[in-house]
Length: 291
Length: 64
Image 1 (cartoon, rainbow over the protein chains, first blue to last red):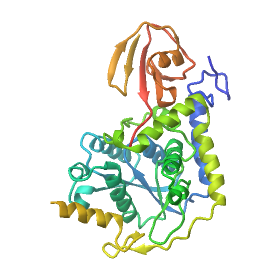
Image 2 (image 1 turned 180 degrees about the vertical axis):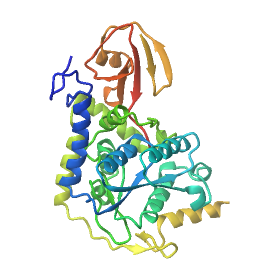
Image 3 (image 1 turned 30 degrees about the horizontal axis):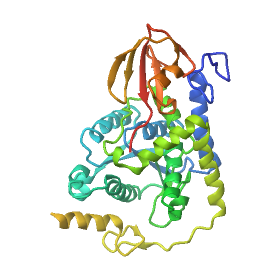
Image 4 (image 1 turned 90 degrees about the vertical axis):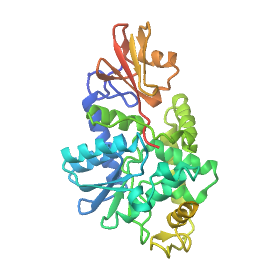
Protein backbone atom coordinates (compact mmCIF):
# COMPACT_ATOMS: atom_id res chain seq x y z
CA UNK A 1 0.00 0.00 0.00
CA UNK A 2 1.32 3.47 -0.92
CA UNK A 3 2.56 5.80 1.79
CA UNK A 4 2.63 9.57 1.87
CA UNK A 5 5.72 10.99 0.16
CA UNK A 6 6.18 13.43 3.10
CA UNK A 7 5.63 11.11 6.09
CA UNK A 8 4.96 7.45 6.88
CA UNK A 9 1.17 7.81 7.00
CA UNK A 10 -1.04 5.90 4.58
CA UNK A 11 -1.59 7.82 1.31
CA UNK A 12 -5.20 8.79 0.61
CA UNK A 13 -4.31 10.26 -2.77
CA UNK A 14 -1.95 8.96 -5.46
CA UNK A 15 0.15 10.79 -8.07
CA UNK A 16 1.31 12.63 -6.01
CA UNK A 17 1.09 10.35 -2.95
CA UNK A 18 -0.10 12.20 0.15
CA UNK A 19 -1.82 11.51 3.46
CA UNK A 20 -4.78 13.73 4.38
CA UNK A 21 -2.70 16.44 6.10
CA UNK A 22 -0.05 16.65 3.40
CA UNK A 23 -2.62 16.52 0.59
CA UNK A 24 -4.39 19.59 2.03
CA UNK A 25 -1.02 21.41 2.39
CA UNK A 26 -0.02 20.40 -1.15
CA UNK A 27 -3.32 21.58 -2.63
CA UNK A 28 -3.42 24.94 -0.83
CA UNK A 29 0.25 25.59 -1.65
CA UNK A 30 -0.38 24.84 -5.31
CA UNK A 31 -3.20 27.43 -5.41
CA UNK A 32 -1.04 30.02 -3.60
CA UNK A 33 1.88 29.32 -5.97
CA UNK A 34 -0.37 29.89 -9.01
CA UNK A 35 -1.57 33.20 -7.52
CA UNK A 36 2.05 34.27 -6.89
CA UNK A 37 3.69 32.96 -10.08
CA UNK A 38 1.08 34.50 -12.37
CA UNK A 39 0.55 37.68 -10.32
CA UNK A 40 -3.19 36.95 -10.21
CA UNK A 41 -4.18 39.48 -7.52
CA UNK A 42 -3.11 41.04 -4.26
CA UNK A 43 -4.70 41.66 -0.86
CA UNK A 44 -5.54 45.20 -2.02
CA UNK A 45 -7.90 43.88 -4.71
CA UNK A 46 -11.64 43.58 -4.19
CA UNK A 47 -12.49 40.18 -5.60
CA UNK A 48 -15.79 38.68 -6.73
CA UNK A 49 -15.82 34.90 -6.73
CA UNK A 50 -18.27 33.49 -9.27
CA UNK A 51 -19.95 30.78 -7.22
CA UNK A 52 -22.32 27.99 -8.11
CA UNK A 53 -22.38 26.08 -4.83
CA UNK A 54 -20.37 23.32 -6.49
CA UNK A 55 -17.01 21.94 -5.37
CA UNK A 56 -14.72 24.13 -7.50
CA UNK A 57 -16.05 27.60 -6.70
CA UNK A 58 -16.69 26.68 -3.04
CA UNK A 59 -13.11 25.45 -2.73
CA UNK A 60 -11.54 28.58 -4.19
CA UNK A 61 -13.86 30.84 -2.20
CA UNK A 62 -12.84 29.02 1.00
CA UNK A 63 -9.10 29.17 0.30
CA UNK A 64 -9.15 32.86 -0.66
CA UNK A 65 -11.26 33.82 2.37
CA UNK A 66 -9.02 31.76 4.66
CA UNK A 67 -5.91 33.38 3.15
CA UNK A 68 -7.22 36.86 3.99
CA UNK A 69 -8.21 38.07 0.53
CA UNK A 70 -11.07 40.57 0.18
CA UNK A 71 -13.68 38.29 -1.38
CA UNK A 72 -17.43 38.35 -1.99
CA UNK A 73 -19.52 35.70 -3.73
CA UNK A 74 -21.53 36.29 -6.89
CA UNK A 75 -23.94 33.57 -8.02
CA UNK A 76 -26.04 33.27 -11.15
CA UNK A 77 -29.32 31.38 -10.90
CA UNK A 78 -29.93 30.24 -14.46
CA UNK A 79 -33.16 28.54 -13.48
CA UNK A 80 -32.30 24.88 -14.06
CA UNK A 81 -34.87 22.83 -12.21
CA UNK A 82 -33.64 20.15 -9.75
CA UNK A 83 -30.05 21.37 -10.12
CA UNK A 84 -29.20 25.01 -9.47
CA UNK A 85 -31.84 25.40 -6.74
CA UNK A 86 -30.06 22.64 -4.78
CA UNK A 87 -26.52 23.98 -5.27
CA UNK A 88 -27.62 27.50 -4.27
CA UNK A 89 -28.97 26.19 -0.97
CA UNK A 90 -25.50 24.75 -0.26
CA UNK A 91 -23.87 28.04 -1.29
CA UNK A 92 -26.10 30.21 0.91
CA UNK A 93 -25.32 28.00 3.91
CA UNK A 94 -21.60 28.04 3.15
CA UNK A 95 -21.49 31.84 2.80
CA UNK A 96 -23.40 32.32 6.04
CA UNK A 97 -21.08 29.98 7.95
CA UNK A 98 -17.94 31.55 6.48
CA UNK A 99 -19.16 35.16 6.72
CA UNK A 100 -18.95 35.85 2.99
CA UNK A 101 -21.26 38.42 1.38
CA UNK A 102 -23.34 36.76 -1.35
CA UNK A 103 -25.23 38.30 -4.27
CA UNK A 104 -27.51 36.10 -6.36
CA UNK A 105 -28.78 37.29 -9.76
CA UNK A 106 -31.18 35.29 -11.86
CA UNK A 107 -31.99 34.80 -15.54
CA UNK A 108 -35.68 35.08 -14.65
CA UNK A 109 -35.30 38.58 -13.18
CA UNK A 110 -32.79 39.82 -15.73
CA UNK A 111 -34.05 38.17 -18.92
CA UNK A 112 -37.71 37.40 -18.05
CA UNK A 113 -37.28 33.62 -18.44
CA UNK A 114 -35.44 30.80 -16.71
CA UNK A 115 -32.98 28.78 -18.80
CA UNK A 116 -35.45 25.88 -18.78
CA UNK A 117 -38.13 28.19 -20.24
CA UNK A 118 -35.75 29.62 -22.85
CA UNK A 119 -34.84 26.15 -24.05
CA UNK A 120 -38.37 25.52 -25.21
CA UNK A 121 -37.33 27.82 -28.05
CA UNK A 122 -33.58 27.31 -28.38
CA UNK A 123 -31.83 24.01 -28.84
CA UNK A 124 -28.32 24.49 -27.54
CA UNK A 125 -28.46 24.93 -23.75
CA UNK A 126 -24.74 25.62 -23.33
CA UNK A 127 -24.76 28.47 -25.88
CA UNK A 128 -27.78 30.18 -24.32
CA UNK A 129 -26.51 29.66 -20.77
CA UNK A 130 -22.95 30.75 -21.59
CA UNK A 131 -23.94 33.99 -23.32
CA UNK A 132 -26.31 35.14 -20.57
CA UNK A 133 -24.09 33.94 -17.72
CA UNK A 134 -21.02 35.78 -19.05
CA UNK A 135 -23.14 38.90 -19.56
CA UNK A 136 -24.43 38.87 -15.96
CA UNK A 137 -21.05 38.04 -14.46
CA UNK A 138 -19.46 41.00 -16.19
CA UNK A 139 -22.31 43.40 -15.43
CA UNK A 140 -22.43 42.50 -11.73
CA UNK A 141 -18.66 42.51 -11.19
CA UNK A 142 -18.06 46.14 -12.24
CA UNK A 143 -17.41 47.22 -8.64
CA UNK A 144 -14.68 44.63 -8.24
CA UNK A 145 -11.04 44.60 -9.37
CA UNK A 146 -11.12 40.93 -10.43
CA UNK A 147 -13.57 38.11 -10.85
CA UNK A 148 -12.38 34.65 -9.84
CA UNK A 149 -13.86 31.52 -11.37
CA UNK A 150 -13.48 27.91 -10.24
CA UNK A 151 -12.15 26.62 -13.57
CA UNK A 152 -9.78 23.74 -12.90
CA UNK A 153 -7.08 21.96 -14.89
CA UNK A 154 -9.60 19.56 -16.47
CA UNK A 155 -11.88 22.44 -17.57
CA UNK A 156 -8.97 24.31 -19.12
CA UNK A 157 -7.41 21.29 -20.88
CA UNK A 158 -10.88 20.51 -22.28
CA UNK A 159 -11.22 24.12 -23.48
CA UNK A 160 -7.86 23.95 -25.29
CA UNK A 161 -8.82 20.69 -27.00
CA UNK A 162 -12.33 21.93 -27.88
CA UNK A 163 -10.82 24.99 -29.56
CA UNK A 164 -8.41 22.77 -31.48
CA UNK A 165 -11.23 20.47 -32.59
CA UNK A 166 -13.10 23.46 -33.94
CA UNK A 167 -9.89 25.17 -35.20
CA UNK A 168 -10.91 28.21 -33.17
CA UNK A 169 -7.65 30.16 -32.84
CA UNK A 170 -9.40 33.30 -31.53
CA UNK A 171 -10.40 31.61 -28.26
CA UNK A 172 -7.06 29.88 -27.61
CA UNK A 173 -5.62 32.72 -25.54
CA UNK A 174 -8.65 32.68 -23.21
CA UNK A 175 -7.43 29.47 -21.56
CA UNK A 176 -5.08 31.31 -19.23
CA UNK A 177 -4.77 31.70 -15.44
CA UNK A 178 -5.80 35.34 -16.03
CA UNK A 179 -7.53 37.14 -18.87
CA UNK A 180 -6.13 40.18 -20.63
CA UNK A 181 -7.09 43.56 -19.24
CA UNK A 182 -9.70 44.96 -21.61
CA UNK A 183 -11.72 48.11 -20.91
CA UNK A 184 -15.28 47.19 -19.97
CA UNK A 185 -14.40 43.64 -18.86
CA UNK A 186 -13.63 42.72 -15.27
CA UNK A 187 -10.41 40.73 -15.40
CA UNK A 188 -11.09 37.00 -15.01
CA UNK A 189 -8.85 34.91 -12.79
CA UNK A 190 -8.54 31.11 -12.46
CA UNK A 191 -6.48 30.19 -9.38
CA UNK A 192 -7.39 26.46 -9.72
CA UNK A 193 -5.81 26.38 -13.20
CA UNK A 194 -3.24 23.72 -12.22
CA UNK A 195 -5.51 21.69 -9.88
CA UNK A 196 -7.15 18.64 -11.42
CA UNK A 197 -10.87 18.00 -11.02
CA UNK A 198 -10.02 14.96 -8.90
CA UNK A 199 -7.74 16.99 -6.63
CA UNK A 200 -10.43 19.67 -6.13
CA UNK A 201 -13.03 17.00 -5.36
CA UNK A 202 -10.68 15.33 -2.84
CA UNK A 203 -9.99 18.68 -1.14
CA UNK A 204 -13.71 19.52 -0.94
CA UNK A 205 -14.47 16.07 0.48
CA UNK A 206 -11.65 16.19 3.04
CA UNK A 207 -12.75 19.66 4.13
CA UNK A 208 -16.32 18.39 4.55
CA UNK A 209 -17.88 21.01 2.27
CA UNK A 210 -21.55 20.29 1.77
CA UNK A 211 -21.44 20.37 -2.00
CA UNK A 212 -23.21 17.97 -4.29
CA UNK A 213 -20.95 16.48 -6.96
CA UNK A 214 -23.77 16.83 -9.44
CA UNK A 215 -23.61 17.43 -13.15
CA UNK A 216 -25.78 19.94 -14.96
CA UNK A 217 -28.74 18.02 -16.49
CA UNK A 218 -27.90 19.55 -19.88
CA UNK A 219 -24.27 18.36 -19.80
CA UNK A 220 -24.92 15.33 -22.00
CA UNK A 221 -25.88 17.64 -24.85
CA UNK A 222 -22.52 19.42 -24.57
CA UNK A 223 -19.52 18.89 -26.83
CA UNK A 224 -17.42 19.31 -23.68
CA UNK A 225 -18.90 16.10 -22.27
CA UNK A 226 -17.32 14.01 -25.04
CA UNK A 227 -13.99 15.86 -24.88
CA UNK A 228 -13.92 15.31 -21.09
CA UNK A 229 -14.45 11.55 -21.48
CA UNK A 230 -11.76 11.33 -24.16
CA UNK A 231 -9.24 13.26 -22.04
CA UNK A 232 -9.96 11.13 -18.97
CA UNK A 233 -9.32 8.01 -21.04
CA UNK A 234 -6.03 9.49 -22.24
CA UNK A 235 -5.11 10.44 -18.68
CA UNK A 236 -5.71 6.90 -17.46
CA UNK A 237 -3.35 5.48 -20.08
CA UNK A 238 -0.87 8.37 -20.19
CA UNK A 239 -0.52 10.07 -16.80
CA UNK A 240 0.03 13.81 -17.02
CA UNK A 241 -1.74 14.31 -20.36
CA UNK A 242 -3.98 17.14 -19.12
CA UNK A 243 -1.19 19.03 -17.35
CA UNK A 244 1.08 18.66 -20.38
CA UNK A 245 -1.63 20.09 -22.65
CA UNK A 246 -1.79 23.22 -20.47
CA UNK A 247 1.98 23.56 -20.08
CA UNK A 248 2.48 23.35 -23.86
CA UNK A 249 -0.52 25.61 -24.42
CA UNK A 250 0.87 28.34 -22.14
CA UNK A 251 4.27 28.05 -23.87
CA UNK A 252 2.67 28.25 -27.31
CA UNK A 253 0.37 31.20 -26.64
CA UNK A 254 3.24 33.20 -25.16
CA UNK A 255 4.80 33.02 -28.65
CA UNK A 256 1.65 33.70 -30.66
CA UNK A 257 0.76 37.28 -31.43
CA UNK A 258 -3.00 37.41 -31.12
CA UNK A 259 -4.83 39.91 -33.25
CA UNK A 260 -5.47 43.09 -31.28
CA UNK A 261 -9.16 43.13 -31.91
CA UNK A 262 -10.84 46.46 -31.31
CA UNK A 263 -13.65 46.27 -28.78
CA UNK A 264 -16.90 48.06 -29.46
CA UNK A 265 -19.73 48.64 -27.00
CA UNK A 266 -23.27 47.36 -27.43
CA UNK A 267 -25.67 50.08 -28.51
CA UNK A 268 -28.45 48.41 -26.48
CA UNK A 269 -26.82 47.71 -23.10
CA UNK A 270 -23.37 49.32 -23.26
CA UNK A 271 -21.50 46.08 -22.55
CA UNK A 272 -18.31 45.29 -24.49
CA UNK A 273 -19.13 43.62 -27.78
CA UNK A 274 -17.53 42.45 -31.03
CA UNK A 275 -20.38 43.93 -33.02
CA UNK A 276 -22.82 46.83 -32.76
CA UNK A 277 -25.16 44.75 -30.60
CA UNK A 278 -23.79 42.23 -28.09
CA UNK A 279 -24.60 38.52 -28.21
CA UNK A 280 -26.79 38.70 -25.09
CA UNK A 281 -28.98 41.49 -26.50
CA UNK A 282 -29.27 39.70 -29.86
CA UNK A 283 -30.24 36.46 -28.18
CA UNK A 284 -32.71 38.17 -25.86
CA UNK A 285 -34.42 39.88 -28.76
CA UNK A 286 -34.65 36.54 -30.64
CA UNK A 287 -36.21 34.87 -27.59
CA UNK A 288 -38.67 37.72 -27.05
CA UNK A 289 -39.71 37.82 -30.72
CA UNK A 290 -40.44 34.08 -30.61
CA UNK A 291 -43.36 34.63 -28.22
CA UNK B 1 -19.22 -5.99 -0.24
CA UNK B 2 -21.77 -3.17 -0.20
CA UNK B 3 -21.01 -0.62 -2.90
CA UNK B 4 -22.77 2.66 -3.62
CA UNK B 5 -22.12 4.12 -7.08
CA UNK B 6 -23.05 7.80 -6.86
CA UNK B 7 -23.10 8.55 -10.60
CA UNK B 8 -25.77 5.92 -11.22
CA UNK B 9 -27.37 6.47 -7.80
CA UNK B 10 -27.37 2.72 -7.20
CA UNK B 11 -26.39 0.32 -4.44
CA UNK B 12 -24.91 -3.04 -5.38
CA UNK B 13 -23.53 -6.05 -3.48
CA UNK B 14 -20.48 -7.84 -4.84
CA UNK B 15 -18.06 -10.48 -3.55
CA UNK B 16 -14.66 -8.80 -3.70
CA UNK B 17 -11.25 -8.93 -2.08
CA UNK B 18 -8.41 -6.97 -3.62
CA UNK B 19 -7.07 -3.57 -4.60
CA UNK B 20 -9.49 -0.68 -5.06
CA UNK B 21 -8.03 -0.12 -8.50
CA UNK B 22 -9.10 -3.66 -9.52
CA UNK B 23 -12.62 -3.11 -8.19
CA UNK B 24 -12.94 0.01 -10.36
CA UNK B 25 -11.64 -1.94 -13.35
CA UNK B 26 -14.19 -4.66 -12.66
CA UNK B 27 -16.97 -2.06 -12.55
CA UNK B 28 -15.62 -0.41 -15.72
CA UNK B 29 -15.02 2.91 -13.93
CA UNK B 30 -12.10 5.17 -14.89
CA UNK B 31 -10.22 5.97 -11.63
CA UNK B 32 -9.59 9.48 -12.97
CA UNK B 33 -13.30 10.24 -12.65
CA UNK B 34 -13.98 9.08 -9.08
CA UNK B 35 -13.00 9.20 -5.43
CA UNK B 36 -13.44 6.08 -3.32
CA UNK B 37 -14.59 6.23 0.29
CA UNK B 38 -14.21 3.12 2.47
CA UNK B 39 -16.12 2.94 5.73
CA UNK B 40 -16.43 6.75 5.67
CA UNK B 41 -12.78 7.56 4.88
CA UNK B 42 -11.24 8.65 1.57
CA UNK B 43 -8.82 5.99 0.30
CA UNK B 44 -6.37 5.70 -2.59
CA UNK B 45 -6.84 3.22 -5.45
CA UNK B 46 -3.89 1.32 -4.01
CA UNK B 47 -5.76 0.32 -0.85
CA UNK B 48 -6.89 -3.26 -0.30
CA UNK B 49 -10.61 -3.88 0.17
CA UNK B 50 -12.23 -6.68 2.14
CA UNK B 51 -15.61 -8.22 1.55
CA UNK B 52 -16.92 -6.73 4.82
CA UNK B 53 -16.11 -3.14 3.74
CA UNK B 54 -18.73 -0.58 2.76
CA UNK B 55 -17.58 1.40 -0.24
CA UNK B 56 -18.85 4.59 -1.86
CA UNK B 57 -17.69 5.54 -5.35
CA UNK B 58 -18.14 9.30 -5.75
CA UNK B 59 -18.02 11.02 -9.11
CA UNK B 60 -15.57 13.94 -9.21
CA UNK B 61 -17.25 15.49 -12.23
CA UNK B 62 -19.67 18.26 -11.44
CA UNK B 63 -21.08 21.30 -13.16
CA UNK B 64 -21.51 21.73 -16.90
